[in-house]
Amino acid sequence: MSLLLALLPSAWPCAGLITPDYSEQVASSDAQQAILQIGAAQIGAEYRVRYAGNATDFAWVIPVPGTVDSVEEGSEDRFLALEAATAPTAVYWSFDDDDEGSGGCGSGCINSSYELKGGGDNLADTGGRSLGGDPGISIVASGYAGAFEYTVLEAENADGLIAWLQAEGYDTTISAPSIQAYVDDDIAFSWVAVQLSPDAATTPDGGVVLPPLRLTWSAGDDGVLHASYPARMAATSMLSEVRTELYVLADSRVAPANGWTAAERSYETDFEYTLSAGADVEPAEAYEDLLRTTGTTHPVLFPVWGGVYEDSVAGSAYLTRYDTIVAPPTNQTDVTFTESGASAGFMTTIGKQTDAGSTGAAWLLPIGLGGLLLRRRRV
Image (tube, rainbow, N blue to C red):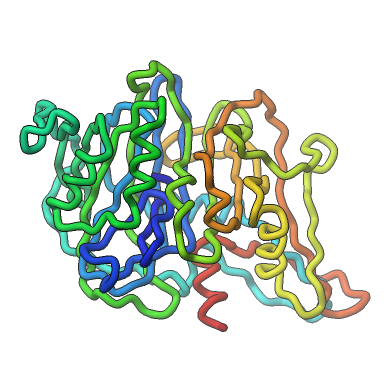
């Protein structure tokens, strides 16, 4: 789901990208973003991911904790606006520093074009037909969402879902344990499988940002509306770490649950959390170090930003942003969110002194997928 990712020879991070032959083709990701919109009877989620690899095509398999209502093309502009509004503020102290900052993804984001397999964003009901006579799996809808061709499935057993993926030509050698865990869960997960064929199989240094995908879902068989991000899809990744940014829109500030916690900070008395970057460390790197210190082997999210936000889809809502960098085995449970009722706003600042005794200027430093791409290219 949440964002979404990949299968490296033994990588299946969050909503896995599965290639036809994992030993020959790779589609892997170390950075992902998700927007969760909590409504009274429905959850909306948009996923955006950066991937790298040499796969000519791959499937993106997303477990959904409820009944899928729609599958649509997401909005790149929505993610860029959220990044710019909530990114930690980088403050440089220097009398001579008159540089201007930049917003959004900047020149570092690489967006690629993909084979468009059809048109239309509406969920097409297929009548719950069974696949190949197997009563354990049903195709309930199919259609097209932007560059994606999608299929919505319900699976009573993992074998049926795995068989369907294999019939579509995808290797499930590594993903099978994750599929089994979701099918065995008390929550009756639905599944959304989308297929994508990039124009160029091999990605450039720094990776490619996939077009965002938007899903909505309502309560499933358990009658509960789950606002969650499928973090445990990344548990078997062979990557050393996975970075995730979660934006949650609700009536009030949200708190993580289901084994995940928020790093401590006083919202009411410490509106601005300030981190100091060392002389030889840039603000973006200092922030990444903070996330690693907070997370890595602990299921902890860092509260980056909170406040009332005018969203292009949700309208006026309270927005909470959480970031984390963790080692894949840390993702043993999905991140779920509950509303706290709190409305105090907060933000994060990273300060760096470049000239002793100066007071200088400040600007926003986008530390999202775009910011990471820029930083990694300079390495």
